[in-house]
Length: 315
Image (cartoon, rainbow, N blue to C red; front, side, top):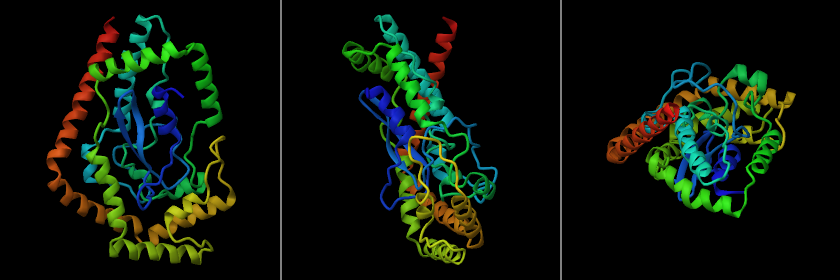
């Protein structure tokens, strides 16, 4: 697979467990060289990391146990919509560059390959499944997930239509991607906000208050007939096969429903969130310079992307 498209596959399907593994559906977009948007780190506890054709999530969750919750570190992150804006601007530069050299390159809209979630913290599922209605309807699956087999077929058709050759690869890698790097910029060449997000989750998971809430959740699940130690285990018990859109079985729905009920009764989400807010607040004060630099870089990327779009519309 060409480097340009590694980010689509990695961002769409990578479910890499990081450190102690978390339930956060959080992806850090890290770009180096020609592979400009490889998902460097995907923090996941479930099967729902495929590219999602869904309405953009709200900045602050509007329902479920995470309703109204927003972590301090999110102030330094690009939203998924902003990431898509930047990606589309980069694709526009690359497409025009390829065309000027006699090649065809028509990448799909970035919204089709940016993971679900408002940003890489992904509060909606940071602590696993937290919405009782979603649990009853879809189990651990994300509604509206694209069929991976259909996406692969579409990707194969695009590759054939673009008549990709060694020369095509060379021009994209050595000329057009560097041009996009120069005109638009690279998303998260470093990502202190994403690193703090992952660290915060892992560190607070070991704190006494969170451990107590996790133990209460596990006991509650055992009483409901589900022998599970962690919400991570619950989601992992019902993985997608990676080829088709999974439909929740009755067993999955029952487990998912109990999962949310037990999180609520033991206040797991509220306790964990409080611990993360406290930890991040202290760490942000220590890392302020790095985080402010990332925030400024994100703003510059967006300015460049919007200016490129405006120029393209005028032509």
